Length: 382
Image (cartoon, rainbow, N blue to C red; front, top):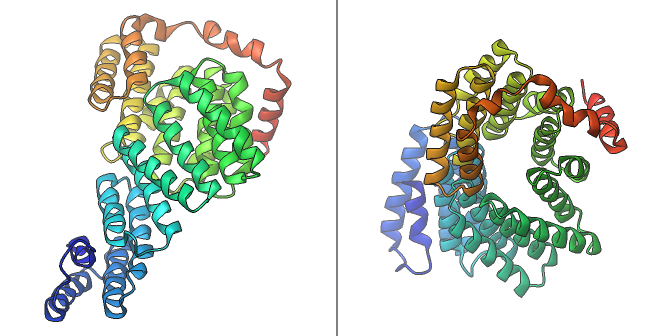
């Protein structure tokens, strides 16, 4: 209701008469007043209505942009991705040609992220491309880099890892040349992840730690730390992985980020054959499983399936893996589909003896960079 009220200000619509606008404004304000005291979302809605009224009154549509953007960020953090997309699309449509260029670029970049989180990869790529086009037109080189980062992320999540690695390396070189710390941090993060996914975890881990050091906001730091935990687990450093992931759970305020870390802690527990801890983390993730994005839901069922296989419950394992496959297939998550199908073809391998799973780490611990990482993670403990 609130966003459709804002639509009255769109440039492609016939301007409403003063009486019609006042009536709609009063009705929407009355609705928001009834929500007063119901939490953060009600406050965001009230801010949007006030901003729209002021924007109409003085003829400055730019006033409504920040309120819509803040609401979209809130919705994204609460994993309401469709609603966040609606808020951002409203901002783009109403503000076209009438809000600050930087705000319009930010809206398109965020729209790309929200679409990617819904596995709408074509829509996400189009949004990132539009952000880059606008940034290029005003010679905002850092935002051009950020738009390239967004498009590279789409390639990565679609499963084209070789192309994603080439993209991240190119962006990292350009970000370092441009002395853009923001773009460099994101490029380090992306490169670390893609190397880990391509079986080069020992090479990827230092990039993830570098991203953690470069980021200047906690949300991004914790995403890098969560991915570092996953990478360390892949080489058998369970203790290091659990340190990183426990720190994420301790500090994370965003439900999806917390869910990701809990999924990996669940995986760590099954790796150690700790059934009680595995079930505790599994139940904790299930509390929020419906609200999280498709790639995280697929990952949850994948890791749960691996865990049940490690504990010898192959029937339950297959059920979880097939649920993960169903989600991944429905949302075009090609890398997940490949991994899950491979696991379904050899479930017994999930329960490999502990000494086999840990053998890789015995070799990797000889690398000085990983020893330094372990020491740095130990220093994170409160």
